[in-house]
Length: 155
Image 1 (cartoon, rainbow, N blue to C red):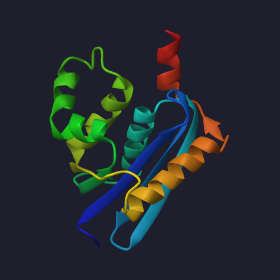
Image 2: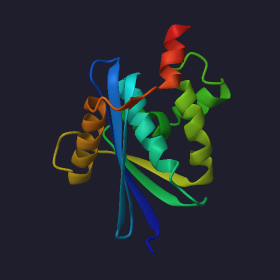
Image 3: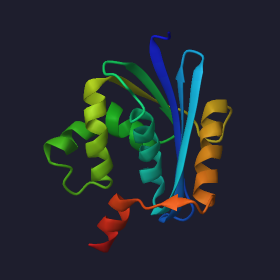
């Protein structure tokens, strides 16, 4: 069994906001699992973060060493520069995607997670595959509702 879980994620939105989707790939040794889902109305940053959350929701145990590769500077900077922890102390007041960040934080606390930024639409096969999954989900018409986004925009 591998010592480290590797996750690749990407998000897409057709319009911002508009229909969107995420793609995620989990790699544990030779085991590879792909995930994707489309949403009726959302934003690109939400889909980037939803890809991360979808992957982390697959985990069955705590204390894993995880490296997450993403082309989202928004996600990498929020976590790796420590902004998330200040946001959490202030109950995410005034921050976009507060619902998703609040869901992410317990995963971060249960695992050893580091984020690595990769250039999007470049030569990384796994990031490119996540982009294919995310855009196919965004274009699928088989959408679910992003309650966090739609409820927030109705307020």
